[in-house]
Length: 289
Image (cartoon, rainbow, N blue to C red; front, side, top):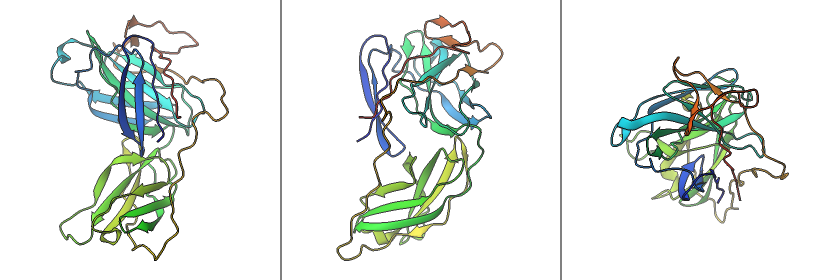
């Protein structure tokens, strides 16, 4: 299974597995200062694209330990740049603007809340394609039944899409409406199982999204029954993260926020310069074994 390993540079190793884009992302924060782990993450997070980056806004979290919140950190990772590091920018309040990114590239976004004790675990919210608008509906959905309870779904790529959401519906239940699957996917292929009591009881639809901009679902297609002794079809594995083994690349910096939202890192305000346009930047290492 593919995974991403995020590595920081502080103390006490932590780890967790988070489903994103149809795969499990393994977060290994070797020593990231996470004593604020009990904090709730930012609420009602909204993510939108700009011509050279993205805007993200949120409501402050509520609950235990939120009375000492000091700042917020926005992690972002260029998924279309080989060997790119995860980068982050700090803000005192919502909203935040990240700029100087690559138009047409997709970025995974995850905010973190910091309080006097440290930072909570990153809250992966969505992906965004920089400089693009709402993607049109997906089309060309085809379904191939491998087994009575297993199907492969493929569809045509939708321009401007940072990812796709799958919807399913049991056609034998009149009151059953299409339900969005919990995980989003990035490729135009998805293996779905187990489908009880059989694949022929479900139809599927696909919608495309870009941040919080998501169009209506494409045409729904009913699952077929498996053919006698069918040839097996499986989605290809995700592409390698750094196939050439070249060195890491760093994206642009952050900006925006409210007028008093001075960029700041976990250790205090960070001066800006030409190499770090705005805000604190971690050297998070991303790996796909």
